[in-house]
Amino acid sequence: MISKELSEFLQVVGRLKTVRRSGWTSQVGIDEPESVADHSFRCAVIAMCICNLTDVEIGKLVPMLLLHDIQEVVTGDFDSLKKKELGVLRVEALEKAAIKNILSLLPTELREQYLLLWDEFKAQNTPEAILANDIDKIEMVLQALEYEEKGWAPNKLEVFWVSAEREIKTPKIRDLFLILKEKRLRQ
Image (cartoon, rainbow, N blue to C red):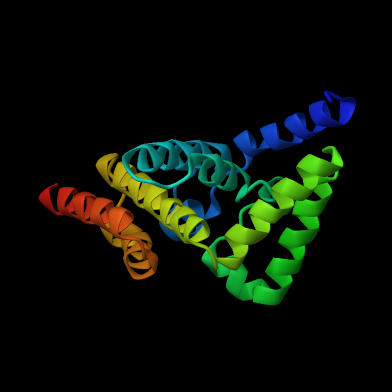
């Protein structure tokens, strides 16, 4: 059923277009970094391509990636420095409260379905969640490469590359990482 609450949810989620990815500012000094919506969009496109090239179910992976950061409408984007400052438990509590608040605008069926996907992503205990997390990381690498191509200092962006290389677990995304790393080295 289409409702007033759905329109409110869509407006709230639309605010992700104005939430900036904070790690680029705090660690590199980029004044106008990509938005969370920019990041989520490319994550969804990456997922679509990976699903079409493999036997991964697109109907779960793409929604998971579209949902994975929507709590940032309320919390803002916590970069690694802010997460350390607040502590893991505090960050988890803030994010959980925010996602529940945002999803409360939806009909019960959607609310429950989306919260399960979001929880699954956070728990990282299914192949889809692990792949979604890897896609989240490879999108960050793509963005880092683009910032380097625009003239931002590679040494300041190195932390993003190191983090992704350490965290990516799935073979397809690892292969993509190596292609991007090779491209970076040729620049």
